[in-house]
Length: 161
Image (cartoon, rainbow, N blue to C red; front, side, top):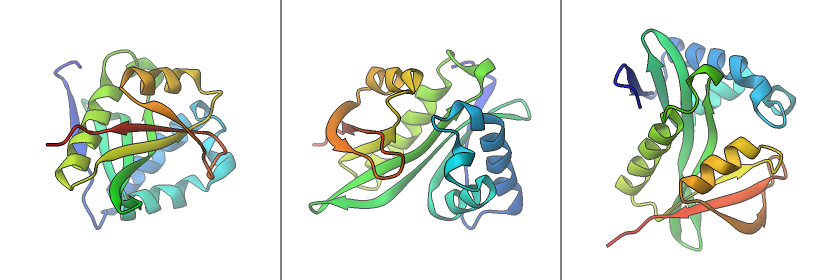
């Protein structure tokens, strides 16, 4: 990832500026989600929910937000804590430079630090670019379908001592 790109962590409770930043980036990226994010949620309300309840990291180049990841760490399956990535996006002109990998690495590190054993996400099978990224990042497809968009559930397990 180029050195001029920095990763910022959103803080809770979110200030109005942070919600505006997340809203703006999601609106810019709306058409890249499959299905479009605006078909599933009110983007402003969704940004508020993410900033209030999720962990949000933003990739910034200069003064411009170019990517983000939002994930929850309060989930359990059969008594085992896991994280769930709800959103990953990188602007088209910033793709291919490792921004998504760096954002995902922050989510992994944060998740491990709070005791999670794995991280999951749901992705549309039509989103080839995202599926390729997740597989490259060590995720594997589970046999479950997601309830949010009816997509595929991918999982990555953490090696813990």
